[in-house]
Length: 206
Image (cartoon, rainbow, N blue to C red; front, side, top):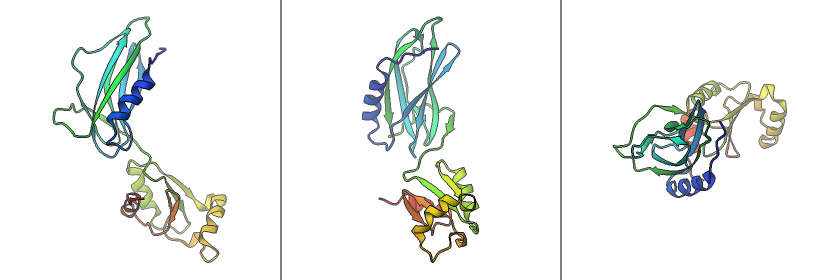
């Protein structure tokens, strides 16, 4: 199915940009092509719930005649908003208006949602020394969280180990460290031993 998005980028910028001033990250709209259907999903990359309403206009498709309603999109999640039924042998053209509200309403529709991973406020990179005793626990916690992160085992990444060495000087042997080296927003930390300490550092004001 070849989808033409008439003025879509302009519409998305105007309506998402102005309605999401209270959010750190604008809600994104993702489409999925199905047999004779086109589904719309809201992606909330913020760490708080939002109510989202989409109004779609265009031609060569059918949609519910019901008045659009706000739908709850939980923090760090993806939620189905609406599906268009595409007319046979037609190419749909459409624009959409997106409204986002962070003052949650008890009347917003609640639907199934899919949790997603998001980039944290400060990029997280873990460097794992050979003797690190707390690394497994921290990695397990990060895997269960909604944060994206990167990790490197120094024993199998000698080039990275070589790059880190000047930051610690000759008096510290990296493999002797028993805690992870955490690069958070470009700053190296060697006193973060658990997930709670990582969150505390992550949410410190810059």
